[in-house]
Amino acid sequence: MHIHIFMHVPFEGPGCILDWINLKAHDVTYTHWYKHSTPPAATDFDFLIVLGGPMGIHDESEYPWLAAEKAMIRQAIHDDKPVLGICLGAQLIAHVLGANVYANEQKEIGWYPVQFSPSSPVKVLPQEMTVFHWHGDTFDLPAGAAGFASSAATSNQAFVYKEKVMALQFHFEVTTENLEHMVQHGEEELVAAPYVQDRGLIQDLSVFIPENNALMYGVLDYLADAR
View (tube, rainbow, N blue to C red):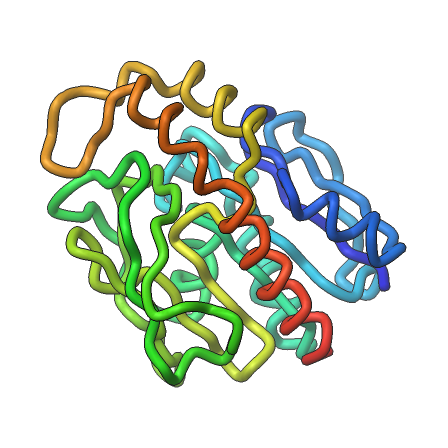
């Protein structure tokens, strides 16, 4: 299978997703939007993964490539390909499916529990799991989508659309290296707030990474099987 990954900044990479790709012997290519690289045609890949970034989905004046990215995500969904969006990627999917994306009442940065619905399409997900968050925006559920995760700060943490399209507001994919890069580049956001942890606590709670990565594999297996 040929997997294509959209990256928005160099410090939010695929993390353990790349380990899964290598384990399964899939091919992988990238569009580095921040480098203004040229994306492939939608016919050139089988599975699209859209990663996170600090920009918002409405910031096209500052990041004009967002318009082209939205068009490609919309086309991949139309072509019935598996599509996974993480954080900003989840918000972009919600947007192209017609849902509102807007500032959440609280930023959610750090390790906080998420509750998963028993109706989750990914059966390996537990009832609750502490996962890594870094987002200030949230989304409404698109028409036809089924939400399956929530947290105290964010009611819509994940949804699935037509079985093959999945949006995750949080970061199952994060590795120790990912975590350090994100903290280094976003440390100015780590100010005292109800759902914002400091750098030391974020690093201390990295003990949750292996469990999160195992669940990332479960999500990827589900979407690969849905192809």
